[in-house]
Length: 154
Image (cartoon, rainbow, N blue to C red; front, side, top):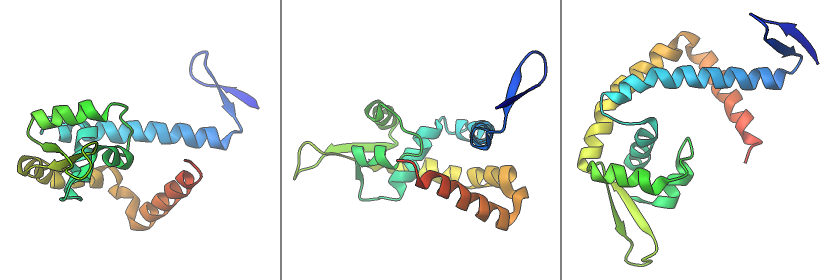
């Protein structure tokens, strides 16, 4: 692997397209995420809490807490505490299943629906600002590439 000098004394390896792609994905994820922080801050939500609200909005009958964890975009090692905070704010409710008392079901509340509903347009506008310049075809190609990259990961 060949190294080239960059600014200052640091050197960057050349010739590893997988590493280059990985680093570009990290940089892009960080920049896109930072762009959405302000939008979510308007409702005092983290991106993880917003993700939970979207998941539960799509499952009005509710979901077991373990299933919420499985569907999350970024894994939170302590889903229970996350849901505790959201329940205290009145965004979700939880109850034990009558058939299997070990299962705790979470449901989005009316307040949670209001919050996620208020965020729909600002989030969409943020995505359009961040990625709209790519156009439909390039966005479709990017989505396809990212899906293909994940397909080999477990």
